[in-house]
Length: 144
View 1 (cartoon, rainbow, N blue to C red):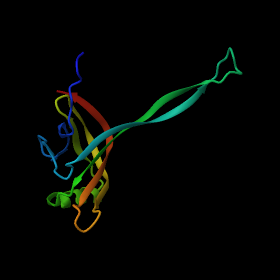
View 2: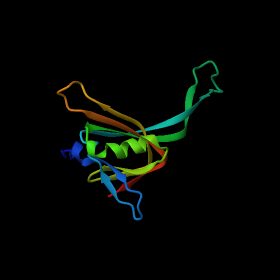
View 3: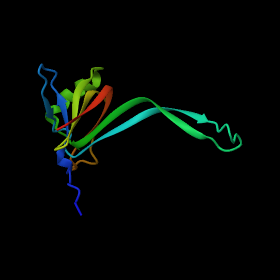
View 4: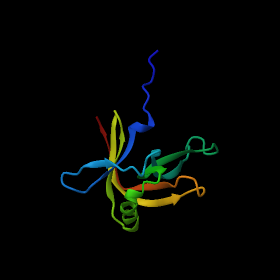
C-alpha cells in the first residue's frame, strides 16, 4: 500500500501580489492559522422529460453558468498590516492573489476583500482577524 503524502496546513499559503511589474507574491502574517479555498458554481436546471414514459419522473439536467472562488483566512491579529487590509476593504480594487499548495502548485486570480473582521473573546485573550476574498474573474491553476 502506498500512503498518501501529507500536505500540512503550513504548506497552504495565501500570497498577495504587490502590483509591481514583474509582480511578486508574499504571504501576509495576518493569515497565520486558518486558510482555505472554496470553488462554487452558479447553475441552471432543466427537467428533461422522458418522451417514451411521460408519466415517470424526469431527470434534471444541470448547466454551469458562473464560477467563483472564495479564499478564507484567519489568525492572531497582526497589527503591522492592519492599515493595508483596511485600505483594501474600503476600496473596490482587486488584488492578484495566489493560493499556494506546496509542493503541488497554486491557484491564481484577481480577488476583492469582501469581509474583514477583528475580534477578541475577552480582555486577556489574543485578538484575532478573519478575512474573505472573492474572485473577480477567472482563477487558474498552475502545477509546479
